[in-house]
Amino acid sequence: MKNKYDVIIVGAGPAGLNCAEKLSHAGLTVLMVEQKETIGYKVCAGGLTKKDIEYLQIPSSLLEQEFDSISFHTPSKKVVIRGRENILYTVDRKKLAEWQLQKLHSGYVHIKTGVRVTGIEKDGIILNTSEKVYYRYLVGSDGATSTVRKSLGLKVNQYAAAVQYIIPDSNYEALEVFCDANYFHSWYAWIFPHREYVSVGMMFWPQYLTAATALSNFNQWLEKREIDVSTGQYQAHPINYEYQGFHFDNIFLAGDAGGFASGLTGEGIYQALISGEIVAHTIIDGHYNDKDLSGLLRKKNLHDKILKLFLKAGRWRTQLHEFIALLVRNTAGQRLALTIVT
Ligand SMILES: Cc1cc2nc3c(=O)[nH]c(=O)nc-3n(C[C@H](O)[C@H](O)[C@H](O)COP(=O)(O)OP(=O)(O)OC[C@H]3O[C@@H](n4cnc5c(N)ncnc54)[C@H](O)[C@@H]3O)c2cc1C
Image 1 (tube, protein in one colour):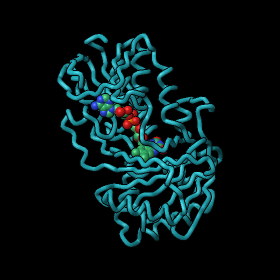
Image 2 (image 1 turned 90 degrees about the vertical axis):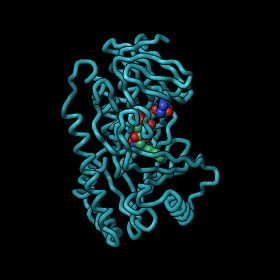
Image 3 (image 1 turned 30 degrees about the vertical axis):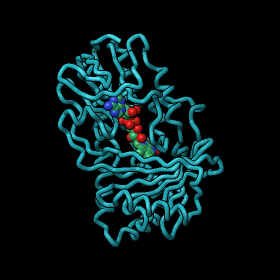
């Protein structure tokens, strides 16, 4: 490892890897620091939308499952929402990262795993090995609890959390979403089948549902649906959806570190990929596609507004869910809902 790089990227999730790919192909020297020994493991349901697939051009062999419908449940209804083509896909995060790694220009990227960035200075980072490595540009793609973000003095006043059980069961076939205010307040639970396991999870904001209440509600709901989690692995992780800018002099934020994820759906892989590319182009020549950033932020604002509506709905929340179930019973409603959510 050298002690000076054009760019140091903290965190090798989809944002950091995509950023490293673009920078390395432009001939910039990159150090990527990842605290985990193995790149790719992340608490995630692994759901990808059509836009992820189109952007990544990911080979179909890497996709775990493909879904042309979503079963949408409210307390009194179940509606099957169908797309013109596939709507959602599941992917194993480790395999996605391995594939992204292959796309790096290895001559320009040095990857250091199992090492944590503990300090950020104006010109360099401090590793937990006490080494200092210097940068011209620093990219914080270190997820929802970003050290780089904290070093900029940006707080995360609002964050979401998601919990899930990864159950080694290949018998789940349908991709399902459950909106039930009695259990999930303004958010939802999901069943995302993979090839050999299924992710059954729930999203919430701790300001509105404490972690203890959310978990207790989730467990009651699992019991009611007779979902056996006894062989499952319980996982939880925050999601940062508070965007406060991505460019701070020679320091950049991408993905969850930048608060690009949706506070409504919890989707963040696409936003991580695109923001990683925006950061790379800004570093390479100062120009990124304005439409990419405005597209991300427009959708994020729309999701924020919809979420506010649910939060304000109070005792009418269940009726709102039921109303949405009515709306998506016809094709036009289904198309609209898919455009908004995916
Ligand atoms: C339960 C759950 C389910 C989800 N399901 C979906 C889904 O189905 N679809 C979807 O699109 N999104 C989903 N998300 C959100 C998605 O996982 C994130 O938005 C996405 O991973 C963000 O990518 P990222 O590259 O910004 O950060 P991350 O993927 O979080 O990567 C950040 C990396 O930085 C490393 N790191 C952190 N701190 C340091 C440090 N100090 N030093 C070195 N390395 C560091 C971490 O180890 C990590 O590897 C889900 C989230 C949760 C919690």
